[in-house]
Length: 81
Image (cartoon, rainbow, N blue to C red; front, top):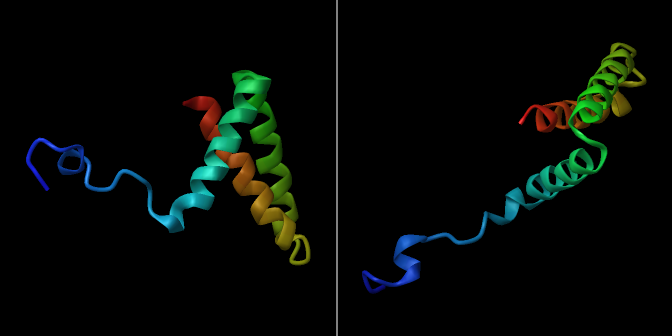
């Protein structure tokens, strides 16, 4: 690589392959937060976290509760930032 080339400045222009699902989920959460607004995304995120936590306390509902809690947490965090 030459010192002035773009590859020398940015050796890894794309994210690693294993992070694509997380990046895609974050972009989806961003789209939802932009469509419904910040305050409503905070409210929906808090409700999803509460429902996910309530389902997780029952052993059978943990299969749905953990992903629901995580999606609610991402939506809540995206609403804050």
